[in-house]
Image 1 (tube, rainbow, N blue to C red):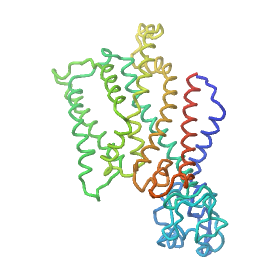
Image 2: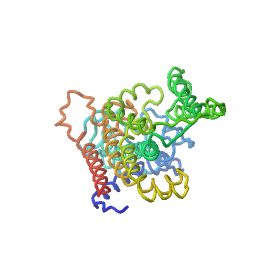
Image 3: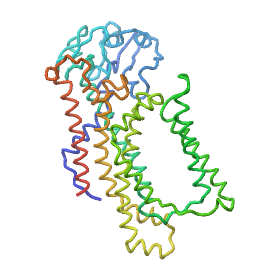
Image 4: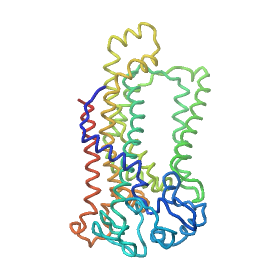
Length: 413
């Protein structure tokens, strides 16, 4: 597949990728390098691989970390032997000062209580004093991470279901009766123990989104294996033709008819106890509700390809259906998938901005996502007087979505 992608699109996507990879080197409220009591330290660099809230091993850094006003502590020259080296944007995404707040600071304004030559908010601050430039840099990582991973999940689901529907149809896939019955029986049990029970559990029980997925998958695997064993009995060993095309298309119609934004908000609230404020939960929810376009494209292509002469010849030679699908049919049906991926990633970026604007994740997302800056915490403030709060993140959302849509159009030519 060859496509001529416009150079401005590549520049924009490359710029967003640069912000994503080097976020902690571009916007960081802790020094990238400093000396304390004659010891060289790199407190800002640890946030690249380690949670910055974890206690430091070095006593000098741990003492600064225990100071209540960390915003000023990491920027106070008196805490270091020599002037430390800071990132170009010396503020971390989402951090703000509880001592010297700079509410709705104009672009270029110095932060009060800090050396004015080093600590300027080049793009201004929001209602709580969070640095807009740091949020712009951090929002690129959230947007690309959400868009790419959500569409990767949608691609996996849509490719699997679309392949089954398009290549096997309603009479080409057979499964034993016992396997079907026990697998369907396991669905409510898996949901109950993976989601419901963990929401009722005490707060000291292990939380997180991925443990719930692991529990759900393990229970379903147990029922599937049990169904394999049950299929050895005579009545349960009968093969059943699964009408997979009808099932997949009806499921796609249901998912397409549901307003995604409303459902995502409802599910985010319902699963708040499982993964409160988790970007992984947001990514998974967007991916689960974005597979329909990929599935329809793949199904349509495979319906066309399976009727071609070379597929018929492969069947006549006695090749297995799986080999025909993987080696011959599926590679020729991937072009629409790339297009759907690009357009879907643009939609995922918009959905992430909507959810952040609506308050998904609460305080955990404030100041690290583009959409979170559109929340006006001070209802008395005139948006025209605080234009910088929404202008810069809105411009980044526009550039990201436009570039991804242009990429999809280029791939489709």
